[in-house]
Image (cartoon, rainbow, N blue to C red):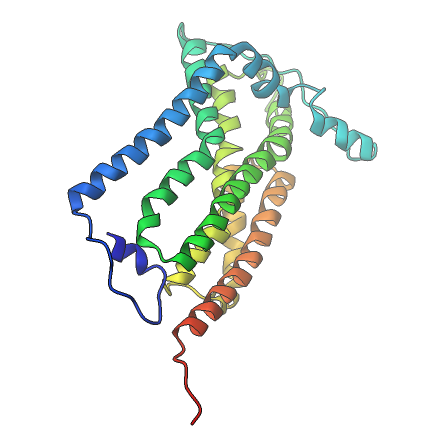
Length: 284
């Protein structure tokens, strides 16, 4: 398995392994413990969220639908033209155990988000034995960057996308006979859709880095398909956001900026690969 991992990082000359290769079952056992430790981190944070369940819902989950939320204050402070606020949006429950199950669901989601750096760190520890010293240094930097991009994406979805989406969807009507009284489950589902998928979408530069490392993608092909990428990005933005042009633009622009950053990342990786794989010549 370590040899497969090394294929992600082509070298000019591969040294013979000094230590004995682990067997397949040994790798599975090691992977199992990494998964267990990551799972424990998620569960511990989820339990803490359950203990402080009232505070979590009041100050985190319900916050984007309140006029006092920081996003509404910032946009209102900019100018009167940009000022907006959410409508009165009472949440209801239609099933006996809905609040109970939503409490557990929200706690697990928070556990996944907060424990994401730990989850990625455990993944890194699993592949570390198959890396060379130079590759380990690169991976060390990727741990912080990967976690930062994910948390930035989640924060962007929470502080930017969610307020606009809640205001738009909460104010949208198809006549006087219907009123917006969403269920708690529906509200939590939409809030999750506005945050976690955006956090994963912000990992684009990391994905491109690894794809460029193994030669699947390069800067030239990314430049060639810029227009197609632009279209796909805004289609994705339309899928993960409500049918509001402003919200789709707010999601699409950062994602396209990340695409342009990914082109630079791919170019750097290709250049490093060419430097590494170019044989050194000695002048006579």
